[in-house]
Length: 448
Image (cartoon, rainbow, N blue to C red; front, side, top):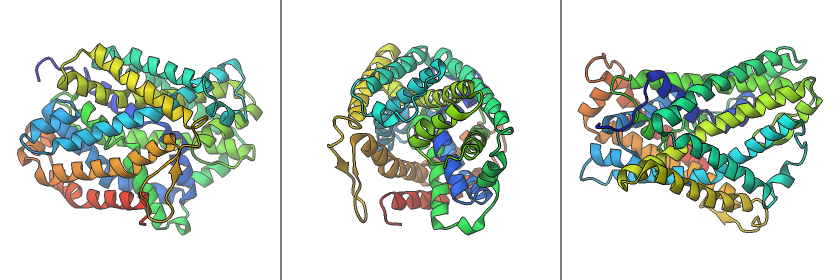
């Protein structure tokens, strides 16, 4: 392993990995589809999907990364020398690079709304005007990139781990305060019924697809992130326990976000939705009517800013670690190159929502293809095509091809633990996870 950086503590590694998983989807997608798809009935299916699909894929990526202690491409080269499997790492690297383009724009939006909340002017109903503007979103995108760069230049321990050890507890504290506030809202009971009362009549085939897809995307698999962070885990870290801890905390945070959002919406007669409209249109309107809404708005938008920042840092780390190790350049140079790329693609994504909105692209799809602006095109390209393919190949690689001694050493910490879950893990990676990933892929391209 040489002098390669690792997380200083197990808790630091968990904090960083949970931060990578907790992102915008936890706030604006998970709560809504939970309520829409049957409340507790959906939660049961989701937890099953996490255990059978998400956690095994996390362990698979941790296994490759921690065994090699290399970047997303170099790790495959080391554990599968002389083969073409490193192209799976290349695909994961490309996913991270493309996602950066629109994720830094989203991060800029949250920074802008946090600033507006602080000064007491959320600009209710100005979201569409803002995102279609030419210059304002670019300023906030640049600010988000500079904030990421400041942390990333500190390296793994003094940058990523130290920031995660600060931001994740703050995020948790803000979330708890907002949850407590929800208890006193008139719509608390209605919101809890929407979120938690099981309604099995709403459970359909689409419910299972939603649950599998949410489990897949929420845990940051198939972006190179978990492999990169796995390479920073110490040899004494129990990767199975770490994966389960991350999945549990990620789910808890997503559920708590629902407890924050839905009582507020139902208290003020506003129909809850999902996506950016929920966060940047619906909730500002709610806060503007709520007693103490100014302070609550500041805490909420700071919450999603921290969630976006911890995720963005982890995405940046994928190309940064790759350039450091494969091109043998300094971390400072790798950070600069990654930020320049993110800014360039971020400009394109941002302008595609405004002056370049007439330019659209489409992906192959059964039925009527979507004609997307570049912002949405990159989102759909990575989530519907590249990530499922990357996850499928990773699952098959670890389940069927990777040397059994490497997997055994990874799950038993070099024979210091029992590794009781090795056999069920291999069964899940060989059979169950590939089938689940195929469902996600076929759903994304419109076959089912």
